[in-house]
Structures are given as C-alpha cells and as structure tokens.
Amino acid sequence: MSVSVFVTSMLLPPVNLVPIGLIGLALRRRWPRLGRAVSVGAMLLLLVLAMPISSKLLIASLERGLPRTLPEAALQRADPAEVSPVGVQPGAIIVLSADSVGGAAGGILPRPGMGMMTLERLQAGTILARRLGLPVLVTGGPLAKGQPPIAAIMALAMQQDFGLSAAWVEPRAADTWENAAFSAQMLRASGIRSAYLVTDAWHMRRSLMAFRHFGFEVIPVASRISQGPLWEADEFVPRVSSWIYSYFALHEWVGCVWYAFRH
Image (cartoon, rainbow, N blue to C red; front, side, top):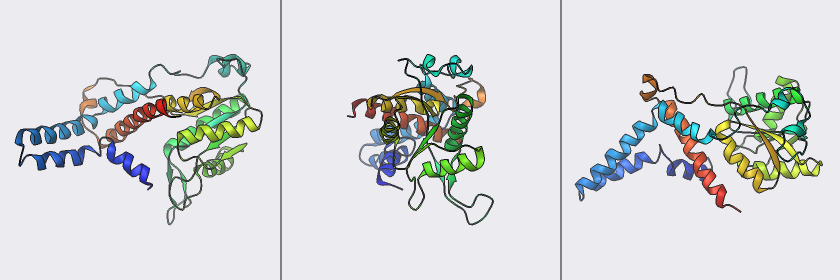
C-alpha cells in the first residue's frame, strides 16, 4: 500500500471516525461533555454511513447532472461527430482502470487480474468498441507492489476473453489525473482529438475535470449507473458494504475539490 493511499484512507470517513471516537473517549477524563459529544458523534456518523440510504444518496450526488445514457446518435451508429459538443469526431474509446486482485496459489484464475469495477468498465468499453468500430485505449499503472500495470492486465483480458485487441496500452498512470494526462498525450500523438470515456458514473465527474484540464475532449459513457435510493425500510438497516460505497463517494468529492484547484 502506498503512503498516499494510507493517508487518504485514514483522513476520510468511515476509517477516520474510529480514531476520532477514541480521542473523544480520552477527552472525557478532562472535558467530559466535549469528550462524550465527540465519541458519540463519531459512532453515530459511523452508523449513518453504514446505511444503504446514505451511501446511495452520496453516490447519486456525484451522478447528478451527468448523462445517464449513451447519446442516441451513437446507439444508432450515426456519425460520432453528431454526439460531440464541439463537433470533433471521436476517434477512440478510453477505458479507465479501477481495482485489481492479486494472483492466488491455485484456481482457474491464478494470475493477477482485474477487480469487478475494472472488469465492468472493460466490458462496457468492449461493447462500445464493437458497436462503433473504434480502437480502444486502456490506462492504468501497477496498483500493488510486484503486480504488472493494470492496463496490461486489461489488454490481455480484452484479447483473450473479449476477442478484441487494445490499440493503446498506457501503463504508467497512478491516478485519474495521470490517466487523463498520459491518455491525451498518446491519442494526440496518433492524431486523435476526441474520444469516448468509459468509467463508472460516480467516477465520471472527476474524470471529466481531469481530461478538460488537459484540453482533451471526451464524451462520457458510464459503465454502470446507480439505481439511487428507493426509500424502503431495509435501506435504513446498516450494512458493511455501505461503508465502502460511502467511502468511494466521499473520496470522489474530495478529489473533485482537489482537482478544481489543481494546476
């Protein structure tokens, strides 16, 4: 685990609420009311973030205002320039990486592979590539020590499991910002000025900010869009999985703020 990943995990809920709660308990010896308020507040927030209704609302806030479907022109195999806001014909499909899994000692998948988010993004990118006949760029560096670049894993799976070859493999990017920087550089070198961008809907807002910073026009295509809260009783029952989605959403919003001031 890199230092940046560790620091980010410790600074964001829900993980940071545990030490905050412990600090509250320590404060109770000298400042009983303050300590009690801090510890109880941290525990309550932990409980709230574990509710599916909370994580779904946070995810939905990231997806608000973004395209929820592929442009109709692309669905009908029309001229891709018709779906571009600036009229520049998309010449490629960019698939952003997400997670990976290490190789196991046995089983049918012994080598390092893609996590579920990366797999869904690659599947969506492959479907789009077959529909539009455009070349694909996969991007992402190593996600763990000793592992190959996630982009190389994606390219191998794309060829062996989906029957398509990646036209470009970008193996250096450590985060979304570098995904945008290196992908734009590679595509511009090939004379391409616009592309479809495939990632999760909740990750799209920050991704678009990164690509726009580097002046590269992309058309968002979400691999998966969240259902949103249903406001049913079981959505108020805490679940461990909701902590994960709450973390993803809070991480994205912090990233969006950081990207807004990044140069």
